[in-house]
Length: 387
Ligand SMILES: Cc1cc2nc3c(=O)[nH]c(=O)nc-3n(C[C@H](O)[C@H](O)[C@H](O)COP(=O)(O)OP(=O)(O)OC[C@H]3O[C@@H](n4cnc5c(N)ncnc54)[C@H](O)[C@@H]3O)c2cc1C
Image (cartoon, rainbow, N blue to C red; front, top):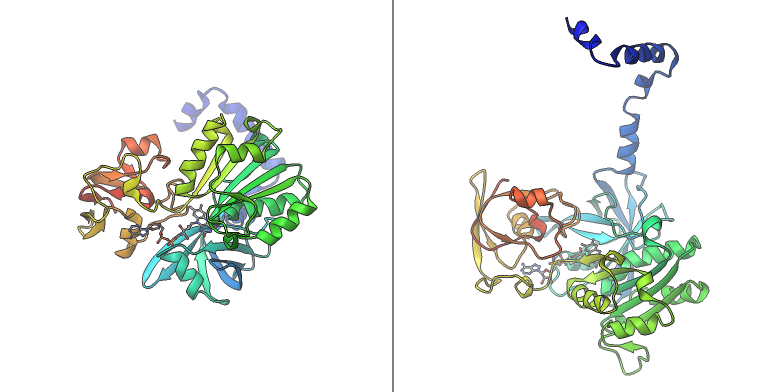
């Protein structure tokens, strides 16, 4: 009966014949079973086991940590990508993403370069407590903040603020080591002259490669500093790119949230279309209540009750991401970017209201069916979460 029905399907007998011929003459693919998944697992393992092999001070507030594999293999990455490090910080299992600052041509290790921030929970622990020989886990390299030769062209402007230099350092190292056909203008904003990370190497690479120019901009310069002072304004960008048309270039912007809003408005003033601007924001906003759209009636010290589907409840502060509050209460969600992009932490919000800052990439269907990204969601009411 089954066969009778199959034979009525148009094309069925031709496919049946083809299968017969393949069985007789083609390679037996069943012996390769599992090989594809093995390769995928090797290139994109879910977790990496890493050890710190060296720690190198860069400036008074930043250090580079060289990470080697404990599994004898590190997956390849694209310059600009990050890994998310997991650590138990004073009894709280948490994670933070860090861009790989070493070149992808270097396959023996990943370097990450971490800058201290005031009251930073994870960064300060890394800078003060982690020693060579310490081990931890991370995700595989991830992220979309990398050059795509098909769509981004060869004329590139990198605008970095503070620790936001790290993905660019990887890109500059790759482009100069491989002598890639790219013109790179790096405009790098730091607070003080002695805060400039990778200053010596950038200057050496600039003097030995005609396709790289580096411009430093300092907001609180010393009296001996003779370069550009203040913020990265439209006027400054125009001066640095003098004689060329900024609208023909691809702009990459990386740094803290505060810098992103300002520089984006400057690029808009120069008439740079959004599709020519690529952005990576480092870390959550310093004060979410100052963010456009935050309700005036709610203060960052307001507390709300969070109820989980298993019935457990705990309190969370309005001015802090839900992800932080969950982790403080021993609940660890799957996460990679911690910046609202990767979607791994998506969670069903059963009731209540949260604030997601503009720019967080939540799928239309997630918005429609009430899913939130706890890494960038702030409670505005008592909440019930399906966890
Ligand atoms: C893709 C990506 C790549 C990155 N790469 C780098 C890199 O190469 N180098 C680097 O140094 N950093 C990088 N970062 C930033 C990094 O992930 C961390 O955000 C940074 O190190 C600060 O973490 P922290 O735990 O020390 O700070 P946090 O403690 O998380 O503090 C971050 C901010 O949140 C606020 N905050 C924290 N806790 C609270 C609270 N309880 N209540 C209210 N506000 C609070 C703080 O005021 C602070 O301004 C990257 C970020 C991303 C998304």
